[in-house]
Length: 486
Image (tube, rainbow, N blue to C red):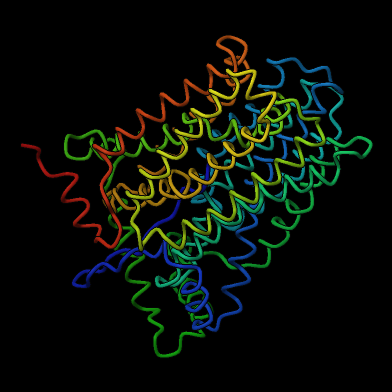
C-alpha cells in the first residue's frame, strides 16, 4: 500500500554532524518532544494536514467493501470492476505529477485546499453514479486528489516541523493513512446492511474532504514556500510563531539559513543527474523498492480483501466483517514498525517482513489449491491475510518511504523521490488492473503463487542491493552507495 513520498530528513548544515533519522523514533519519544515544544499551533496544523493522509487511506480501502455490491447493482463484470478500482490510480499518477508543480506555483497550502474540494466533488459523483462509466470517471477525479495528497501532505508537515520531531510528525501522517483504511473498513461494516449501502460507503468521504479544504484555509503557508517566493520576512514570522514554545532552543535564523542552502543545492541539480554512473545505482534501488512494494500484491489485499474472503465461502456481510481485522492489523503493526525502525534497523525489518509476506502468499496459494483446506480450514485464509498485512506493515510499507528519503544526495532527493513515487503508483495500477483477470487466466491460487515468486525475487534484490541506513549520516550512506565497485 502506498504511504507517503516526502519524508525528508533534516538537512545537514555545514560543520554540524548529521542527526540520526527520526522517522522511526518511538511514538512515546515523539509525543514527549511534541509536548516539549509547547506549541498547540504546530499540533493543530499538522493534524489538519494529516487529513490528506486519511483521505488517501480511506479511498484506498473503501472500494473493497463497496465493490461487492457495486458489481450487482451496476452489473459490473470483471473488467469493469478492475477499472472501477484502478482508474483512481491513473488519476493518482497524474495528481502526483501535477502536485509538484502546483505546490511550487500556488503553495502547499492552496494545493491542499484544492485537493480537498476535488475530493468532495469526486466523492459526491461516485455516490450518485448511475452507471459504470460515470463511476469510473469520478473515481479518476478522486485519484487526482489522492495523488496530490500522497505528495503534499507529508511535504507540508515536514516544512513546518522543527527538526527533532519532523520524522515523528511524518510518521504520524503514515498512521493517518492506515487509520483511513481502517476507518473505511468500519464504514463498510456500518453500512453493509443499509439500503444503497455502497453509495453511503463512498459518499461519507465528503466529510473528511470538506474538513481538509476548510481546515487548510486556517493554516499558514510553509516557511520553505515563502522563501521560494522571496518573502523572507513572512517566512521568519511563520517560523517564530511555530517555534514560540521552544524558548531558548529556538533557532529561527538557523532554519532560515538551512532553507537557503537547500534551495541553492536543488537549483543546481537536474533530473538527468540520476542517470549518471555515480547515481544510477541509487535510482535502481529506489525504483526496485517502489515496484516490488506493489508487485508483491499489497493492494490486492486492500482493494479485494472482501472478495478474496468471499471466495472462501463467506457471505458478503461476513467478508466485510472479517476485513475489519485486516485494517486493525495494518494499524497495529504500523505502530510496531515506528517503534522498531531505529532499534532493529530498516534492512532487518525489510528482509523479515518480505519473508513473512512471501510465506503468507504461499499459504494462500496452497489454500486455494486444496479443496480439503477450503472445506475444513476456512480460517486459514484470514490468518494468512493477517500475517501478510502485518509483515508488509513492518517492512515494505514504511521502509520504502524512509529509504528513498535517505539514500539520495540532497541536490537530487526531491526529484528522485518524485520518480520513485510515480513508479509506485504506476506499479499499483498494474497490479490492481490485472488481479481479477489473472485469477481467471491462471486461477486464484496461480495468482498467489506468482506473487510468491515475486516476493522471493524481491527478497534477493533487497538482500544484495539495499543497505542499512539506520543511525547513519546521509554522507556515509551516499559514500557507500556511490563508491566505485572493484
